[in-house]
Image (cartoon, rainbow, N blue to C red; front, side):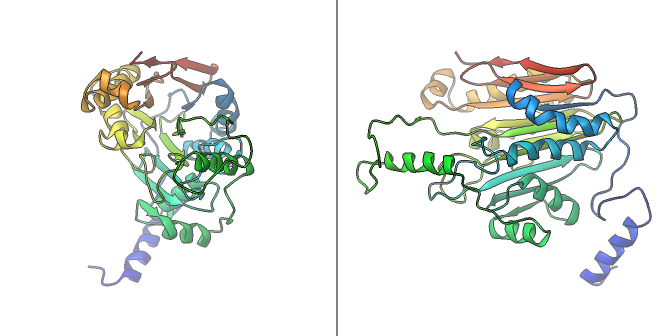
Length: 346
């Protein structure tokens, strides 16, 4: 029996050193997946404009025979570092106090390991920090100050995540928050502000030629949320889940509903039972509609969620509860594709 933390860690490092193929840490060991002959692919939960921007950097890694985990991280970083994206990473819309708090999760199919961060401030690429949690610790989730300190210890640069654009949108929201506070519009009081609060997120899911799967979900969360609020994105089984023998799924939208239905886990388990990715995504949306009292109540509440998924055969699917037709985009050896799924409630 190991008698101390030091001997335990030393033992793990010794085990890790036994194989020159292990390039990461004692906790994460890359190994072969379900076998050669699979068609590599990388998918994101958005349509053409963002899909072309996000997916090609990751596809370049896969196309050269690189690791799928590197590919999905590289693609996710594109959205996280883009200040024009108001729902992910740098430039994401802040909490009600004007502070950007980021959530992200990562999962790696061959080892079934995962990592996540929540309420992470000052770091532009939370998905990369989540990967470090997976690779460099025997934990799964770090939050708040602990997540920030962990990121800084690993060399991540501290930054102000609030851009001029996201600050302006937050100020306009504050100005119209109540008629009983001291906030007044600085300019035109009739200046329109979108009433719908952003819940945007990005899922990036991939599979390499060995059939190994990896996925990431990253978000700045619900716009103007109560500080410390955590949605589904950093929760394994909610905003992200995968199984190397089945496929992968990710969620965007109202995180509370995804959490209480274990949404992405549900999609993967439905695919395991033989349902197509498309039907599995629809059934996960149907579960949310059911627990909220049916279609008419969903219309009143305006709860919306979207699922994207693929299986090991390379079939894809996506579905959402409300709004416009949901889309995903993906790249495989045949090229770039945009897939239109199904919206359940008119």
